[in-house]
Image (cartoon, rainbow, N blue to C red; front, top):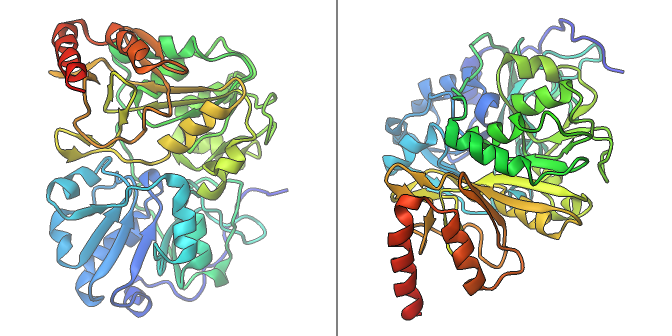
Amino acid sequence: MTTEPVEIPLNQYRSLQNLSAIIRPGDTVLWGQAHAEPVTLIRALVQQRAAFGRLRLFIGIGVAGILQPEHADAFDFLSYCGTGENRKLAEAGVLDFLPVHYSQLPRMICSGQLHADVVFLQVSKPDALGRYSLGLAREYVSEAVRHARSIVGEVHPDVPWTYGGPYLRDHDFALLVDSTSPLPISARPLPNPVETEIGRHVAGLIEDGATLQTGIGSIQDAVLTHLKDHRELGVHSGSIGEGIACLCEAGVVTNSCKSIDAGLTIGGTLIGGAPLHRFAHLNSSLELRGTEYTHDPSVLAGIERFVAINSAIEVDVTGQVNAEVAGGSYVGGVGGIGDFLRAAQTSRGGVPIIALPSAAGIRSGVVASLSGPVTVPRSDACVIVTEHGIADLRGLSIAQRIPRMLAIADPLHREALEREVHALMKHA
């Protein structure tokens, strides 16, 4: 059994100046996303960028705010999403996108379609056996660790030691340094009244004993606040946040009814602050796994009563979902939405949910035709939820779906939406 981490001397490579001896021109450098961004290493990479030749950076959700558009003088930026700090890179035209399902990323890394020459890791202090934990994230990083030419790590005292492997030792790193830089943080506003009402509707679709997947955002946070009276819930998700931690500590999430991984909360990354880190530290009932496990269709197929809760930018009246582009800007991504929704559609007792406000500013969330790409096709029918109600599109024809979608649209947009739908159907 793992004991409390202790101080163990790092290997001999302690200077960040050694980056220039590790990274080669043309390399692809990859690291963890969101709160798992290795801040010290990224800053050093940016500061020394003139020394490497041109590099490609594969980045996930950005919250540290270190990468800037002007750094395109030395870096080619690639991501699966335009979320967080990535938006400014996208709007500057320097961020390219990989529009693939999240479950494909490990296979792409393994096959070499997505290179991972050098991997930057943010790791915990080692345990008594000298094992460094990947701390806040596994996801696609764990597969990259297996295939990278070089691994560079920063050890942070505030990163929790988490279960799920892989665990690394001193000799696994080409460079290992201490870091005391503040961990990346991202502001999480409290759900507003609209999001709270959406959360109430979604919570009503969740039965006791169900296994949950939740995306990232205030709507999902609102759903979790309405589950305090539920019982014996389980979790198998890409991300774990403070809302899930609170339900675990309150005894609502027990994972006792899960058809796989009974007794364990399964996730890919931790997104939250110090309370979440304290919950996760040395918590053997929580395991972080790689994307090849958390998102794999063959794994997800074994989960009964799987409820997938995700958000979108807009949904058309036939059930097509755009979770990528708003106002011509790439602000989201394909991510795991397709993986999880498809699993919930095929799960016995499962519920695939898309939850979104009926309007964002002057823009309707329910539309006659999408303004961006089709992230989820209408053939993968979901349960669509706005603050105005629930439209279960499963098993319905197009003609049956339209009135249900109109009923949950923003009342201020319904009349114009009906006219637009009528015109489209007339010319279809």
